[in-house]
Image 1 (cartoon, rainbow over the protein chains, first blue to last red):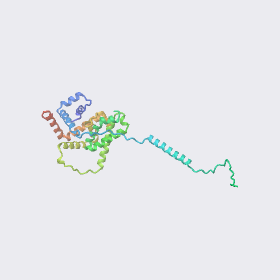
Image 2 (cartoon, rainbow over the protein chains, first blue to last red):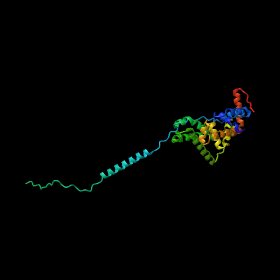
Image 3 (tube, rainbow over the protein chains, first blue to last red):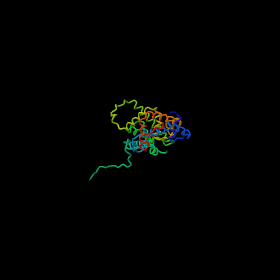
Image 4 (tube, one colour):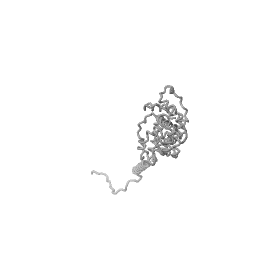
Length: 111
Length: 172
């Protein structure tokens, strides 16, 4: 069996071939036998397993840069709010304001 | 082929069959097929250009990894009673053995053509070969398989001749 019979493979596979070369190959009984054997070979190599019904794979959404940015903004806002709240709630060290009016108290005398 | 969904619809059966014959086990073939399409769904490459070539390049790489892993692991002893298998399993086992005896690249181009139904150009793109090289390798693989599987081929021809009502005769 030589490479001249490659044309039989090409014919079997519906690939381009030279018609005259195929005619010459099939004029030879060995070429015809090869063609029939290759058809039978094609039949027996087919897997018998049924193709499983699979759902197309759905890509898993990744936590992308938008998610990271949103998390960072949230973190900054929380930290800022905490600091502002801390400052407003801090105890003051300033003393009492100056009096605006002085009331003189006199002792009570009923007579 | 524009989107992973379209690739899946067009090729998942072919990829599964390719793996079935290449690894000889349905469950492994199913897992490998899922992995191929999972990668396709994550990759933008699959959506550009020749999707089938990309898919089968990924499939082939996964297959090579699988065979490498299998070679590293110790093989469990066979629990199947060899004499109790039906004839169809005998043929399938003979086909698997004959395929395993082929050079890896010849086996892959043969399976991509014969089982997955790819054209020579698609196979060439998937295996990074020329179309002429694909043609030669497929033919060479066929001749080797024809020699190794002479008995099942003869049986198949006889059965086909019986079905068509014509006696089976060799041309030579």
